[in-house]
Picture: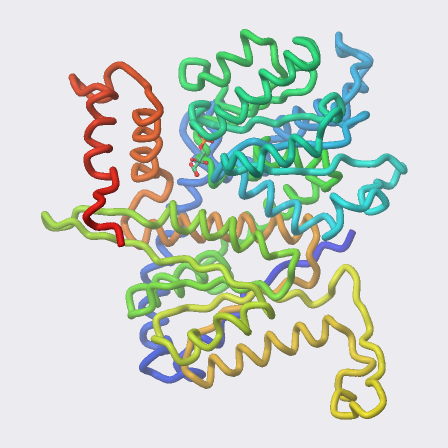
Length: 503
Ligand code: PA5
């Protein structure tokens, strides 16, 4: 398969295009370069974690694309064991006879899986068996990712699944192993599998992806007791940076995505992001994002002009928000930091959002994702008689319309002095997606460093998780001497509906 590099096009954020008031001037660019260049070796150290002496167990997200064992463990579960020296030889892989793969997870344990599937498998993958056939004429499983606990949604799925339970594999993903939503989904399916099928079927049909340490993850502990098949979320990798670990790779490999090509793309991007500023797409992307955030444009819109890339914008939204939305203390003051990521889709949102983007406040940086060559194309038919004014469309490719609309929107935004970046994909494949994921992960690390915050934690999410435990009846100590019961009472006081304010 061809190995094209994705490129970041950044001329349209510059003052010579959109003017001095809104664009980056030469002087500002030189200052940004001075600020970001010294961060390059620091970020490399942070994400690759060269330590002296190296700790074997340490896996920061930058090491994921090079850790061969991760993909090997995934493949072993997916395809089975074909190594005669392996004591379990010839164990069958989970793909065999599997018609449905269900992922239970949330946030970083789901968004990457969804994004990979939308990007790299056809639109009708789940519905059309022919589109699920691999090159050996084997049918891959449908994929369903449940990242919510809406009972009506899950019930509808389970009703559809019916007797298909024994042809379904469930991948329960939770790094911490204690997230209520995923735990609840797991407990529902565990009960169903054991009672409707058998304990052995339950063991055969569930893969738990979680932290390796059973002291940290209750899911790991259960998996050990119940003798489930497991995969590992590496210790030093946070959820939203984990798509290139077993978290994202298992469902991708089950559904026929070339995970080696994906990881190769990430590795090749890793070489580019260690280059000096002028050649470094992550450093330049971060510098531009940082500049606009600190110059009155705190909103960052990602707008793919490709349905395949639609959920990459969703994945980016979490990466950006959870990593960069932080409070820091500076000179005794609380400083609240965080660019607001917005996802949009071209051309759909031209007819929904662009009015605001052009005439509303000039407070946004736009990043378009553009694809030069689509997997498939369609020619537009001739104009009907009497509708000659539609003749300009006749015989053109739909991809030409889509990409011309991107240009048209970009032009319109530039006319109103709105800064625009474009990430250019020659085509969408596992290799370019691997590059894109890695580019944005590293960009996030750079922006975190520029803001002086820690992009790898999410303390504000943790509070909501703990509050849910309290409301759902967890007992015992929450914090020294303050119990979950007391905590639940305090939450109720603040959140119970006061009828005086109901209209
Ligand atoms: O990025 C993160 O750390 C979060 O979004 C988590 O992925 C999310 O909260 C789910 O956590 P867990 O995988 O521990 O269930």
